[in-house]
Amino acid sequence: MRLKIIGSAAGGGFPQWNCNYQLSRRAWNGDESVLSRTQSSLAVSSNGTDWVLFNASPDIRQQIAATPELQPQENGRLRSTPIRAVVLTNADVDHIAGLLSLREREPFVIYATRRVLDVLEANSIFNVLDRALVDRRELKIGGKTDILDVAKTPTGITVEAFPVPGKVALFLEDNSKAGEGFGTQEGDTIGLHISSSDGEQAAFYVPGCARIDAALKSRLHRADCLLFDGTLYTDDEMVAAGVGSKTGARMGHVSISGENGSLAALAELGISNRIFVHINNTNPVLDTASAAHAATVDAGWKIAFDGMEVRL
Ligand code: MLT
Ligand code: MN
Image 1: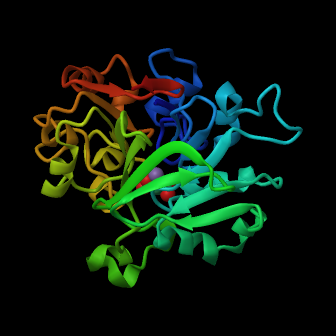
Image 2 (image 1 turned 180 degrees about the horizontal axis):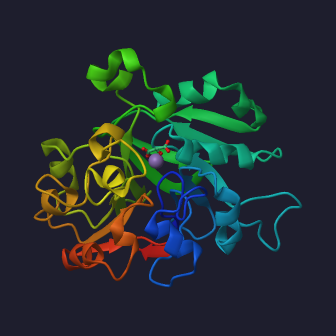
């Protein structure tokens, strides 16, 4: 199975269009220790020809341009794509807005929880994806789902969705329910166990996670590969940087560092290959010369960059 991290940054990308914080500033200036990154998305294939996207970022056109495997194939039909399906892990803008760029009457399938499908349903702009061509299929939590193309042909990829602590999309927060997770319900944020349909290779994909609880730890125990939420290094990083007032806890993202951070919480689980994805433009791990980068790498983690490939 091949996993290509086609977008490794969180919402906004890196550098972010309106950002002058030192990391973005250095990226604008072409500083080689801070690599630019597009927004969060993963492409997976078990046969090298049929690809499944996990999340569709606003940068999808650029990501396809940078990834020959996702382009119409040389001997393909006049209009065609190797992208058979898009699986969504939440309804954040950085994960669904790219669907709008997949219009132009091309058949594929969208898989998402009922909660996320309801968001697409409620926003009529997604009707640019003609229902006669683009099937929307519900992804049930628990149990395995074979990812099939529009004609119900297997793509060779199977997923199992599980709930993770998280938050409803920012643009759907209900402020009258601030004490109850702003109206967050099960299905708003999921993690995925992604495997080749023969079950031989598998990886976990959890690009958004608010807390690492006992259930998640036991699920991830001795995993071969984990792509995990690396939004922030420290909980108050955006506040300290002067770019915002929200903590990671408020945004639904566990931090990398700290007592309850992912480095500590996921240290003793025997996970072979650990990679941070969905990295925010304030995260010091983006700077390869930083102490945070060194500490993360020393703890056995990799920091994703666009185009990073994992072969299992
Ligand atoms: C998040 O991951 O918290 C969201 O993508 C934030 C956003 O909508 O920009
Ligand atoms: Mn996001």
